[in-house]
Image (cartoon, rainbow, N blue to C red):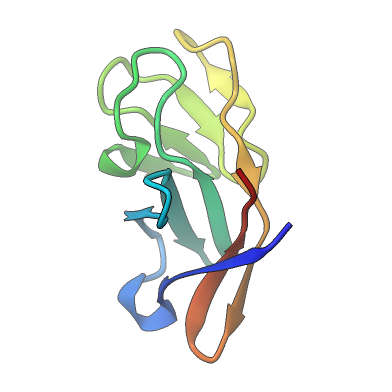
Length: 104
């Protein structure tokens, strides 16, 4: 899988998240915790809301629409109404830029 450049690491504060759109239009939620930077699909599997507009609750992301929660490191469902997890992607920082390991 190729590494895709996203945003500068200084654009993402600790305990915050933001949406980035890859060149192919795919939306990724980037999340920065004390432990590191994580990347998940930005679209909730329950009702297609943007996860990056939700809240970080411990190690989970809570969807702003109906409250489904997904584990940040893995994308696994942790609270209903979602029953299917979201994809998670490996990340790294290179030259002060966040890279996501992503392939269509």
